[in-house]
Length: 97
Picture 1 (cartoon, one colour):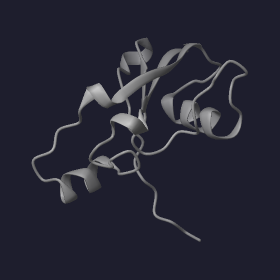
Picture 2 (cartoon, one colour):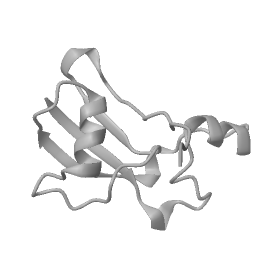
Picture 3 (cartoon, helix red, strand yellow):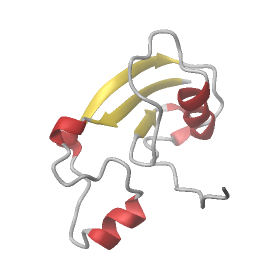
Picture 4 (cartoon, one colour):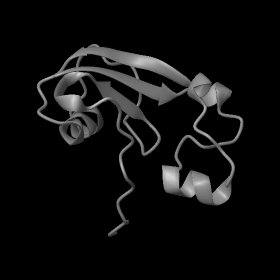
């Protein structure tokens, strides 16, 4: 799968939304829109994944050698033109401690 991975640039994240899920962002900032200007392209290339959930797992547990970003959070976006997937913001899973 050929992907592009975008991550929030912490220097441009004036509203501290980097680690908020989309639901939490809308709850704490009701009129907020996702501002694409705070994102940087941190990876572009081919990965051995069948879907974007596997991409999320890869970039959290087994980073590609040429990846220089941080582990993915709920506010990162991975985009793929394959399989009709254009972008994906992972949903926050409940903490099960």
